[in-house]
Image 1 (tube, rainbow, N blue to C red):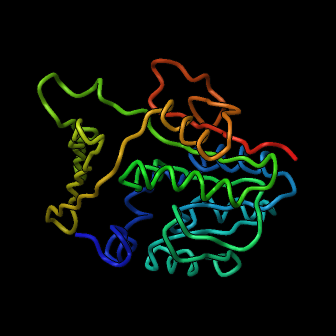
Image 2 (cartoon, rainbow, N blue to C red):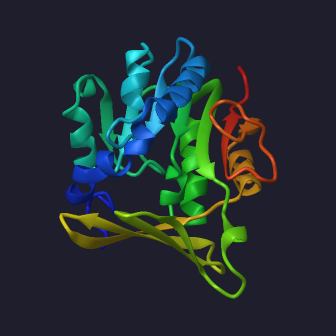
Length: 246
């Protein structure tokens, strides 16, 4: 069920860092921060879907100014409660359409967050919104999974992407609408709880077209934050589009 905070209401926000603990480890965070800090240089950065500050806080500790857009007040409150969180400005709103003051050298969307926009129109609007906030030559960085349709058995529409003692994850695909619902069964205090959220999967070439519609061009595409080559076997990509220079 969707609330004012979207699908990231207080119960989700309260457990988010614990649930995504692997993504908070230095091995997952440091390569992201290294690349974003390099791209930003002396400029400002804009994080879309800043959440609880997994990337924003360590990036800010590197001396890189960060402004965030976040739909969920509950997630933003968790960010503000952390050391250094009060120093990061957060605008509450839909990152596809929300405007903030100033321009930025880098805008970024990590951890599949572009898929939280569940229509093609919203994803296109996001690219246009980002382009309007970037300086000439500025970069838009997106980390997102390559749609895993090859892992779905023929004639079926679901894929078990995680099977553990305390968590079971199942993706349910709608091939006609290019949508999916991720179902998470979590063992909490001895009982199984179900949470589900809708997403729209998107292909790399489709993202390139969205960027072109927004006046940006592809600069780089890698298979990960350490600049691994992007190949036919890559399960994710980190792509960088740029606005025209000066």
